[in-house]
Image 1 (tube, rainbow, N blue to C red):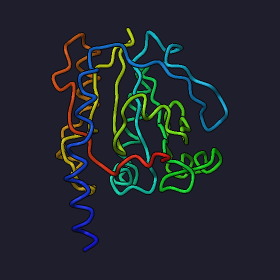
Image 2: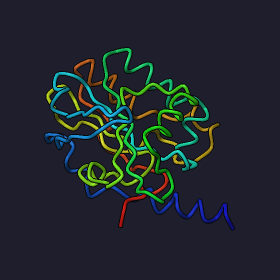
Image 3: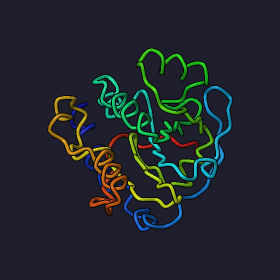
Length: 201
């Protein structure tokens, strides 16, 4: 029964987020958010750099797939090493799955050996709603001219199974590789998969 529930959830969420896809190619919404160390970040501060936004929920099986395997951490380390700004965004509301305090998030990042540029805490869901984030994970990429160039899933295998990572096409890496080479992004949108973002009601 539990497995069927997760499968149903995954199928339902595969079709989420399509209404926001038309924003790709348009200016990314500017934002201001505070990270787990109390620092304030504005998207406009990073003009001239690629920026990745990764929606996160540490209790979601689909998020855990990419963290417990080390896949998300590898992506963070690889792309930040190439000058990409990588923000993990947590839009879970207090009392709901995935909500963390600043200290809890810092402990989690250390435990998982994760290395985003910063973890942005969004308990009221303002940033998540601004971008139309639907799932965890849900990935967005902003180019150096502040245009949104990708909106969608992390990869092509919409499961919570770690063994699927190796054979999946990673849409984030693909988009960044193409864009950095001056090429158009061949897959600018895809259907995000995962758990629904746990917004405050």
